[in-house]
Image (tube, rainbow, N blue to C red; front, side, top):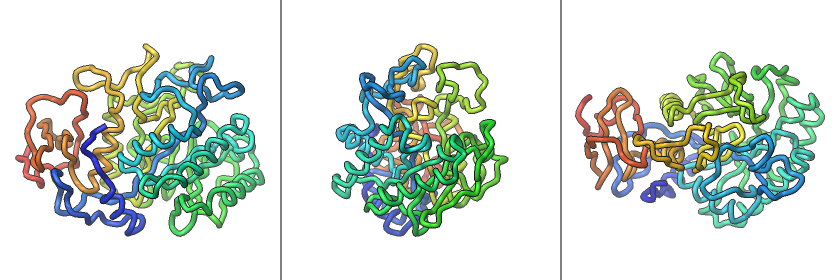
Length: 389
């Protein structure tokens, strides 16, 4: 992670003006900033609260499992999602990217999802978040849906919504969207071979938004909030999702090529073009999927490949770079203000590389070690003083 990055002023500016507020902050020391912000979206991210340490008995969400739950090992090691030390550390990392709120995944039913351990972790996350100083907190929301896609029960979905409303929605750290608590409803609305049950389910106490297992551009909705959203995403002024990659076949330990939700990361290029498309629309929010979903392999949390069959995250010289996707996300989130010191950039249509040093663009003759070169919207570097390409 780039140690030069500091976002308190940026986040204060964005959130004080409400969702979609313009980033009117002055340019931080050492940055290179355009006169007009490139975009102003509030950034959210999915977060998996299901992980248990490998020695936890009775849990199907262990990192080590007969079906190989994860082919990656987080850089911080295997962990329990409800561990306060882990929460503190991860929240610091996530906030430094520029993320303002999380969507906690309880989409596999609440009461009996993983024997109730998932919701116990969610309880711990809310409790720890509220204990933190305000400057260290993240806003939180919840996604449900197992009662619809798995149980075919609208009554069960109502019960879970009641639980979220009474247990979490009134807490000061719960994220509001358009004046109501955000609740994401995951269902087989169009994809994954499932038949959607009660696809119009709603709850007037919440701002209910939809997520599908795999969302293709042809699926017309006003906006999608996840789960896996294929590039090119459907344009939406409300919300657009950026996905780093996926390998849903890993859920069962079988990489048979059958799943349609296998997205080649292309060593970050897929993530970058997803960001560029979202930025071009400047939606009210951009949702990253996700922080630590190593089962479906959409995660961006710094990690090492532990399975020789999975491509490691590497730099231009083939050196494994665990925070590769955090660096990409950080660069694009910061673009709401400008180019960060120590960052490397190029025009999306050009190959010339520039670094940022002492508030200046410095041309580079070769790709950097340990850092991605971030493609920027066409013409932006020219506006900032780089020669036309």
